[in-house]
Length: 125
Image (cartoon, rainbow, N blue to C red):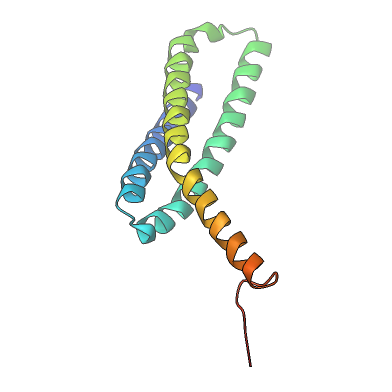
C-alpha cells in the first residue's frame, strides 16, 4: 500500500516535470494556447500530488504506530524526494522566464494607465 502511494507520487512528479519542460519550450516559442491548455492538467496533478503526500504521511505514521519497520521505504522515499527537488528546480527555471515577462506587461499597463488618467483605455466621445 505504501509503495503504491510512493509509486503514484513518482508518476505524478514525472508528469509534472515533463509538463514543466514543455512549458519552458512553449514560452520560448510563444505558444500560449499550449501553455493554457496544459495549465489545467498541471493544477489537477498538483492537487493529486498534495493529496497523495498527505496520504503517504498518514500511511507511514500508521505503520510506525503499529510497530512496523518503515525504514524499508527509505530508499523509495529518498528517490521521490530527489525527483521532487528536480521538479522544484525546473519550475524555478520556468518562473525565471515567465516572471520578467509578467513584470514587463505590468510596467506597460501602468504606463498606459498613467498616461490615460488612471484608465487602461481612454474613451473619448
